[in-house]
Image 1 (spheres, helix red, strand yellow):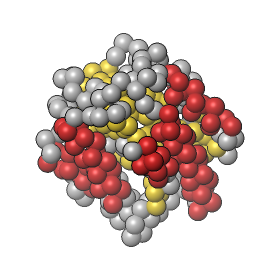
Image 2 (cartoon, one colour; image 1 turned 180 degrees about the vertical axis):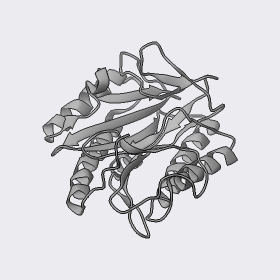
Image 3 (cartoon, rainbow, N blue to C red; image 1 turned 90 degrees about the vertical axis):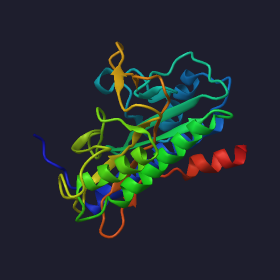
Image 4 (cartoon, rainbow, N blue to C red; image 1 turned 60 degrees about the vertical axis):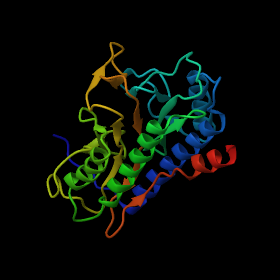
Length: 261
């Protein structure tokens, strides 16, 4: 079993730079995501932006994944393929992005509403984002991995939503996926103790209905068993004393979405 790689202050700053490039890339996606756009267009835009800013798309060719973004529509949970699908009013689109910059990885995801979405789906998106905030609140020295998972699970299930258990968050650094795993469910006070120097991706994947998922024959795409929508938000976070240091940001996305209103 591989060990946890604890990061120095300098390494955390490099991961912050990578994470900010991810955040800016998602901000570029936010500018163009709309009814009538294909998901492949979003992929091309993101890859160009990442390369123009000195980065390398982290997902492209990762274990054979053929695209620079994971784009998951509606009942798809994660790892969806960009393609010729044209977005329509009422869709939700989870866009997961990773980059390598100066050898270090950054990773973040955001679920975009397309046009007007129904109230139940709006609630799913809001609660999933709140789950991320609640998980991050527990990413402090002295807490345990189970505290993060419990915070996410408790908030999601309180609203009647299903917590995906087959997929988890993870450590981030010189690899895209490092130890420790960061589940979105768990027991308070259980699991690995959080220490200074840990950098983790916290990424609630919350289903509008049942928790169950199915894995597609393409070897990547994961969707809900009951065809209800799923939401996914993710930040790269450095564990600190007192308060976590969130290395990625949704500010670029949210500024664009606010301007679009």
